[in-house]
Amino acid sequence: MRKGEFAYEGKAKKIYKTDDPKQLLVEFKDDATAFDGVKKDRLQDKGILNNRLSAIFFRLLEEKGIETHYIETISEREMLVKALDIIPVEVIVRNIAAGSISKRLGIEEGIKLKKTVLEFSLKDDALHDPMINHYHIYALDLATAEEMAVIEEAALHINTILIPYLEQKGITLVDFKLEFGRHQGRVILGDEISPDTCRFWDSSSGEKLDKDRFRRDLGGVVDAYREVLRRLEGGDNPALES
Ligand code: TMP
Ligand code: ASP
Image (cartoon, rainbow, N blue to C red; front, side, top):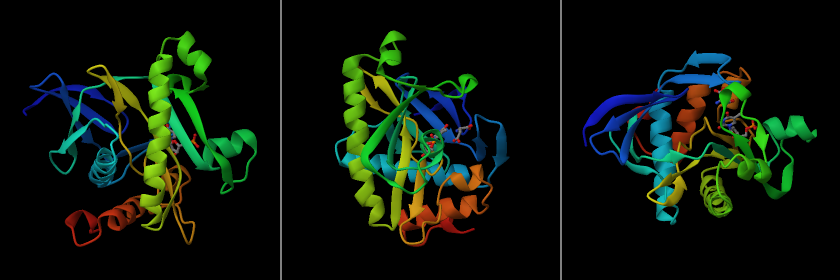
């Protein structure tokens, strides 16, 4: 695999082509943004931590039979992935009320939902990722009913894999966001799974170990990400040193 020309820059990642048109290289940046890029900062080593954490989650999901775009880790900030035709629908899975659902529906943060909630947003920063439903998805031709069935089943299955895995590390999975895309006729998991895209709470203290520390100016953002990596990876390794 050879790193090719720069293809695209997102808020937290840069994408490069490779010499294989079916593969891309993802570089995780240290940039942090919130509220559709209104709040910005650079958090030293965040990219390294998210590259490591995403790889751990993708490998775990692959082991459990969920196809992801992850191929291999190339360097401390880079992973090789399958090129996807991204479906512009963000899929949010919620176990516990927090963030926008708490505001929108007036539910206190921390209340366990009686049933897992799936939400969909149009992936469009300029429109602030508005929430949409199946009618919008089909009316705008964003995905087919067959694709949505695959996506929903995968999202719920991923939740049932991640909850006990994280709980055993002392982390409560509050909610998370997934993105899917098409690859050689199949719909598979893309993007990243990291504290940027999940809410992780310490199971005993309730301490936030995710990007809410940045969104809410709580400080200690990178230390919290490092703590998540320490719990998932354990042992001595250089990425864990502050
Ligand atoms: P929300 O409560 O703000 O809607 O966020 C729900 C989950 O989605 C939370 O784990 C954070 C994640 N998320 C993203 O990954 N990207 C986003 O742009 C937003 C708003 C949330
Ligand atoms: N990722 C989004 C942004 O950059 C929002 C968020 O994660 O809160 O604005």
